[in-house]
Image (cartoon, rainbow, N blue to C red; front, side, top):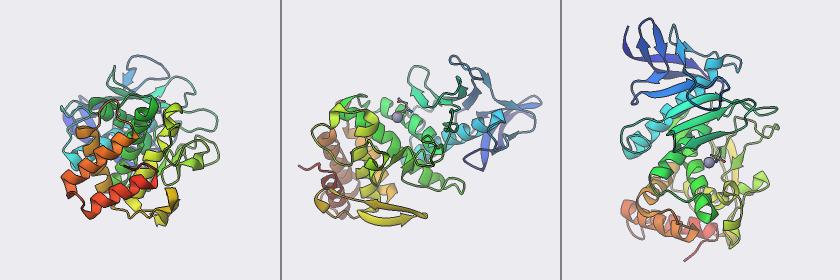
Length: 332
Ligand code: ASN
Ligand code: ZN
């Protein structure tokens, strides 16, 4: 056989999923023919180049265990496919740069590497196997987070320091959550937690919480003038919080069996508009109004403009956006 196939993957985090493959002679490659030939490589513990494409004889990939090298390939290939589909289905975006070109993924980077990252230079995502308590950094939200760095780079290009850096990080967490909800996997229940599958803290807690970011011990819940001076993975907190509030509203709520309790600045009440509407507003703000130097005040303005475009000035939705910003101490 030749050409585009759909194989079966057994991921460690995503469960049993379809993966796009390509038949070449009597073998298959992890090359997603339905998504611009988006490729998945095995770096085989290397730290440069592409290693080798994942290949397989029967188009059944991985076995759900970490010891099978293909398993990580399945999870990151699925993550890349789900993120591709999310941007296409939700916004008609054709790839990270909206030019129909696919980024590629590299699994099994280095030894005991506890991170994953996006690089503009290779137009690719890279994933470590984790070490000690941490499991492979290959979950759906991690893949969507890294790939969304590519989208930010290709659009607003938010500078990765100061308040714009926090907004850059939050944009990746926001679309990571949106991709989870869009994929709706049984094996990865959609939530407003980041990295809840990879056990990076070794005690079962997530890497970040969007309903109340300070639960991680370092992220901020609210904007204040010192925000631009802290690490971008913590100054993302207020924007992640804004996105949760806008999606689900303030106070206690259980979504898909996960309980949240989202506080607000001065206890202002916020009514949620649903994650799809919230993500549409953030996407339009990111791609139309934010620039490399946008700060929190500028992001508020960008999302209000986006809400005006999509839902009308002073519509209930527009007013919910304003209330959510007030809820993180960003006003006019
Ligand atoms: N995984 C991290 C991130 O996407 C890598 C980094 O610190 N840049 O933020
Ligand atoms: Zn990031």
